[in-house]
Image (tube, rainbow, N blue to C red; front, side):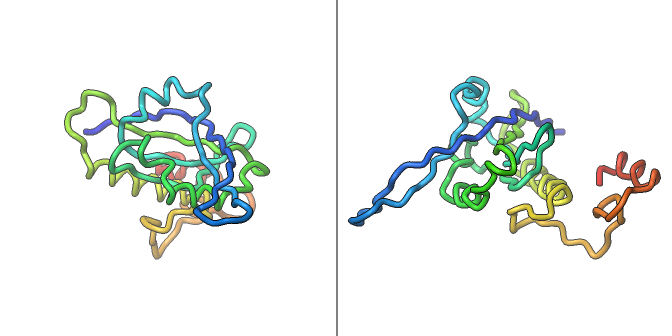
Amino acid sequence: MWEYKVYGPYPVTEEEYPVRNGKRGRPRMASRYSVPSSDAHEFDRIKSSYGCYVFATKWSDSFKPWYVGKTTRTFEKEIFTPHKIAKLDDLRDFQERGSLHVFLIAPEKGRGAKNSTATDNMETFLVGACHRANSQLLNLKKLPKSAWAIVGVTKAKKGARTEGEKALQEFVGG
């Protein structure tokens, strides 16, 4: 069995800088996202690993997931690629709704060769779990497609949940 460890959450900062793109006139603003240097020590140790990651906003003491990804190379080479930056730019208003963070989920060291199947299965699980927590998840692939739902357990409902719904969700992880 492959065991993975959670690293983070790391705050993600955004800097804007002018970009000309070879055109004359007023430069447009591009953003560059990064993990601040105050949190970089642990991040530097794990950035050359692989696994899954979750971008989430933090409100008060809770997190709301927005995007789940899987690396095919390393965290350093993939979490801030142009495709991911476009996703983060879609969340440009996260400052008003909380601060952006990234969780990294990587295999424990010394587990042998990279297991792409286990990492892919974990990404599928995380997309489903994060979609249950936030139906506005930005992922377009691997979204759960189910013809059924258990109201109050796997699907949110209006009003308070019953004790039975709470208990069932607690052990099925809905």
